[in-house]
Image (cartoon, rainbow, N blue to C red; front, side, top):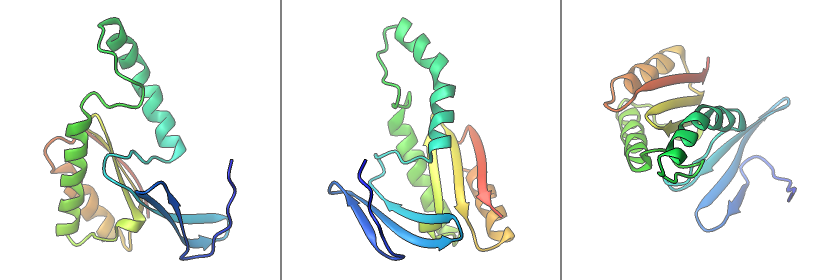
Amino acid sequence: MLVLSRKVGEEIVVGDDVRIRLLAIHGNQVRLGISAPVNVPIHRSEVYCRIQSESQPTERAGAAEGEGRTSQESPDSNADDDLGRRLRSALHQQGISNTESLAVEVYSGKVTISGRLPSTRAKALCVECCRHIAGVRQLIDMLDK
């Protein structure tokens, strides 16, 4: 494991396409901003573990049918990528454009939104906006109040 020290505002670059910026430190909580291509899945570990545990039965059934899916692939990752783009675009059009503090994760049509928004009104607008996008099968609201 590589261990690095960073000050607020400084970045770490992973490969050519991923940048991780230290946005803020509040007590024992660190806020990170991650810039990466849409096709690079980024999850908090607890969300990733939940996705993996939910996909386990599907993987076993798919393997039995000879589909050969890997554990990190969504059954329709192109549709998930498209849905993620449409969600981010809709949020931007609604004026929710602080994407450094908002994460939108899509897996098989299940959308998890997390992060911090400036007000309760912004949070309600964000959730309502996500619910009205075609293709959202389930919305998991993990936004901070």
